[in-house]
Image (tube, rainbow, N blue to C red; front, side, top):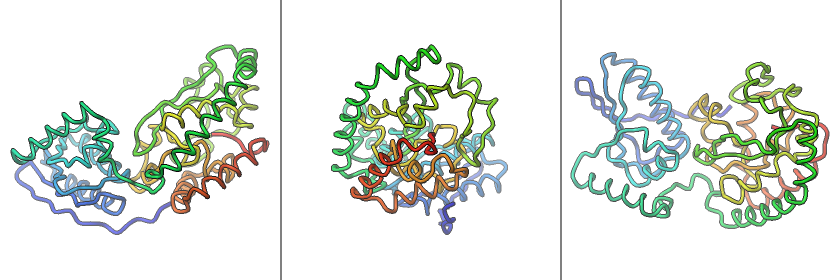
Length: 342
């Protein structure tokens, strides 16, 4: 697991049943851990607290860990009947909140007329042009700003979709003969900065697999689910998973920009719900069809700590050459009987 960063202090002003927390200029993992701890201590020390105002007037950078701390504080406050209000939200923070839909969750206010006008203009701009809002989004990792990586994703996804089209009919026939029902399976996953999207796969499980999930034992530790001998997987599904053919429709996700050819494993929302603040770092890059986790014994990984370690290892070692290396390694092990699947 990642080491715990040193705590960062956040100025707090208290008045009756209201407390104001000043957020630093950056809200990355180091500051995010301190921000969460500050709010948690504040809630525990003030049983009569009714409102926490989070002042963002000087915050110009917030990454996934900052979002994680904000979400965690919201949950803790909600359990205690405390309202969290965001004050003087800067364009950079608003862009992140809008990307993840959190701008609709938190009430917002401004401390002065000028700030109010600025906030109004930002909201109006976001309605008229999403591009203006996207320009304020943070570069949480060098891969996010790499036009060459995006170009490789587009070319690779187009080639992948051609292959998918060629194999589509035989795969469809095999699925229908083995277990009649829908051909494709979609599931909500969390991408860059926690933005939710629909991931697509060829169906490899029985039709009512989601309803039967509670009956299957989870063989791994931590915030993800896996069972090597999952009884819900069909005979054709096992072949599709072993060869990774079930993941071919994800080339559409790559073309759309929700995913990359290479990245981290895309988690489900219920997995993210269980994250501690430092673990949100894995969302600083786009999820990928392949990556460190997939080429380093994905069927043998039994601990969420190992998943985090491999994801952060990818972020640390990333380069375009490293992406190509992982792609070639993926191709080399595709038909390995023991490679497994997510």
